[in-house]
Length: 273
Image (tube, rainbow, N blue to C red; front, side, top):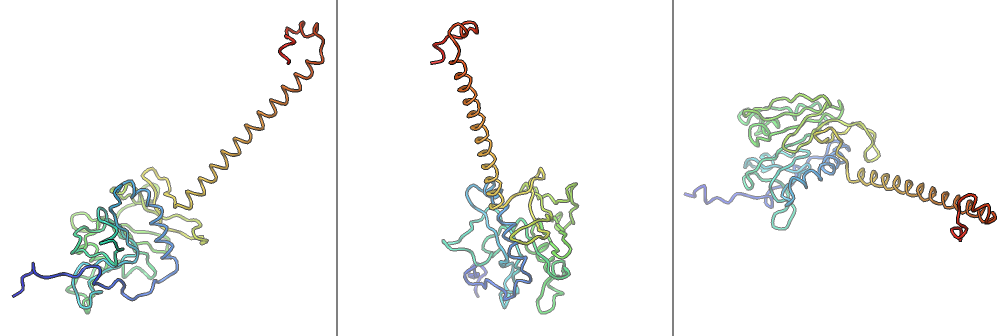
């Protein structure tokens, strides 16, 4: 009889990296990029060793099933602290809990339908054909501390916090944001232009309420700041040039005066040379 310790459990190389479903709307991909790009400086500060993992529409395997996809959930976005972003020099195909043991700190789902799937609390014993509710998996199986459900059509987000083994719906702060203390950030809705689309977007703010910018936004602000500094320098140069011209005109007028007139003004003629 084979012991449990002798079993070789599959890893991310042996498990499917997709469940074969299409992304349900064109906002999902840029939304994931926006969330990832803007929080990178925060994560780099939290993890100077680079030990963190971000998944976008990637599988989190939490149980062994046949077929394997039945044992995975694929959040639209998730973040795992203190794990390497690559394994054996290769990008992860999926995130396998029985190989890692560290659960994601936060998962985000971008709702295209009515949110029923994202709020499904069906446990394994009640799921048809082995289907288990996504909400139940994140809460009871993977045990993700923070779970965000972003309803694109309604431009609203719900954030749940795992407290005493159960999700508690969080209340927004005065800014309408949801604090995620382990990251030192807040999550909320921002109306604006991103990738040529004027839409409500899910975004991060810092603990003081400052919007976390993307690399492109930071570059634009830096360019604008550099242009302001260039204009200030140009104004200073023009002022200096005007002062120089004024001095030259004054000296030229003084040179036309006689020595007696200069002496009367208390000016040494040699100072004009």
